Length: 145
Image (cartoon, rainbow, N blue to C red; front, side, top):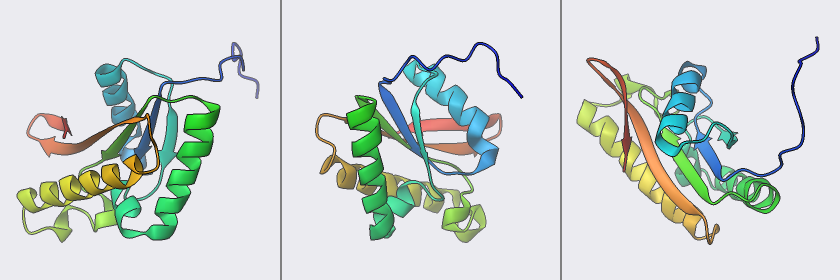
């Protein structure tokens, strides 16, 4: 199979996204990033649980920091990192693991805040934005915190 029109000339991007690996959110997360930040090209770091892994798994935190520093910052020159959690995340046990919608939101916000603080200590000069998606009556809603 050959893909026509692909060029390997660009080696810089301004944005990286740390998000969960869950396939259900790939397209809508891409749409959110494009609409919110105005970019279609960005580095993607995907791991189950996203912020939860950074906060509660020291080995994963070190891997994420190393990857973002060496590849996203030094090689691709990012200026901004988005840490994105999603609704009903299996890394947290899914929505059923929480006693309420409010408890799920609180867990995501707490981990996102802690992940941001942990990564800021290692990524000087990179703006870190945190966000999560949540189901609503009309679909999936994104919240920047």
